[in-house]
Length: 147
Image (cartoon, rainbow, N blue to C red; front, side, top):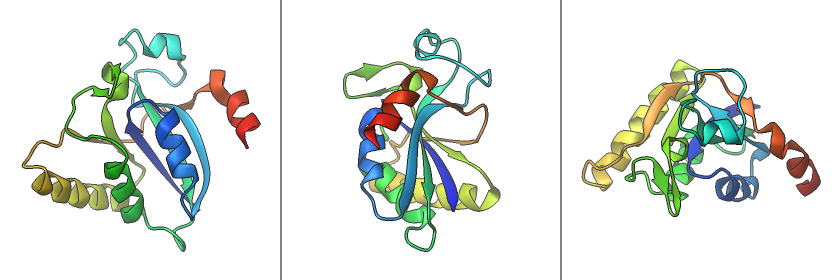
């Protein structure tokens, strides 16, 4: 199994979409890229923690590739809007791919470039090394109840 961590706006919609894809074994909502290893939704909403809302995906690379996951990532949100998706505004709703290794980084760079060509250079998606991921503990019980 492999892991992908993606920020594409409010985590609930993407979490549901990704959970329905063949090869995605498990999904989890959380926060990533911030200044601390633990945070809460209330803290993130202040804009002071630098965390993005993310979906963490555990996937089987024999069934779905990281490339394909990133293709879905770009279909599931608007990568040309800075710090908002739909009605949600704030830095926590930014478009960001958090890579776990150099292979993921290279794939993400290539796919971002392809998307940028399609969208006339308007892609604002960030690419960052995974840092300070934490599960959204206040939603953990909700996640378990859904499954």
